[in-house]
Image 1: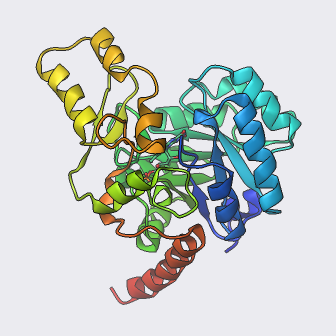
Image 2 (image 1 turned 60 degrees about the vertical axis):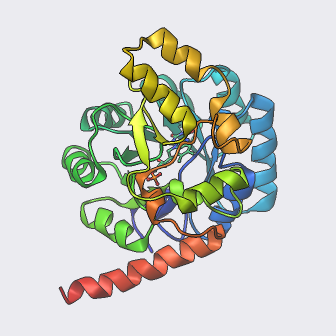
Length: 313
Ligand SMILES: Cc1cc2nc3c(=O)[nH]c(=O)nc-3n(C[C@H](O)[C@H](O)[C@H](O)COP(=O)(O)O)c2cc1C
């Protein structure tokens, strides 16, 4: 399919695999890129040397374009950004921070920059910072999210109205039908997260993948808004957070409970009770663990079928 995003990234299908802490290492990113989408390494959970190893392995595993996602709230940012440049990564996704800080640095080196936002206000800021494209992520998405609670169905047309650069829709998209819907609303492509966590090549723990395919509608909630809002599965750790809220908690108590390493414990090490389990609302529609290639082929088939169906409505 030829459009502004497939041309910008030089990919076959307008499907981006969201960069995800503890889930998207080189294996997932290269599998997605080899299947015709854009694979993205999630640098947010990687020490600089681990990122270096992931980029090198990804370059060996695919000759197709892939990207690195960097949430700008972690330490070692200088080192991370320099490794990306040194190893010749061609596309960078930045999130959770001010796009002005790094965009010029990458653009001067010929690197394509995409910034992830969750509101119209930040989309406008990102465009004026000079990024090449924007990911607009709705409230239903997995992982960290904005405080404004704007859902994908509202966010995409609202952002589309205000920006001119290519737009990638994220949040609640796991099927070709949802992909078509967001493209009708003005997106040039989709970014898919949760669906790729329950994927054979994802580095997420098998217990986490099995948990995802077992949960239903209403089993996730966006919480910890005072720290960094994040959508979690309602497990024991989530319930401990909620009891703090019920007893009138403060930021320090929340920080203490969160402690360090909760996300790794849950999503990577498989502790389904004490770990932080980040996933989107759409998990309730994910019923199987399959390969990246199957996910992309199924989405593209559904997309084409949905287009035909729409004609008869
Ligand atoms: C487990 C998990 C980890 C994530 N980590 C990141 C991250 O490190 N950086 C980022 O920009 N987005 C992150 N996200 C968001 C995804 O990249 C993507 O935008 C989002 O999952 C899309 O919504 P969906 O889950 O409904 O498909 C994460 C999402 C999940 C589910």
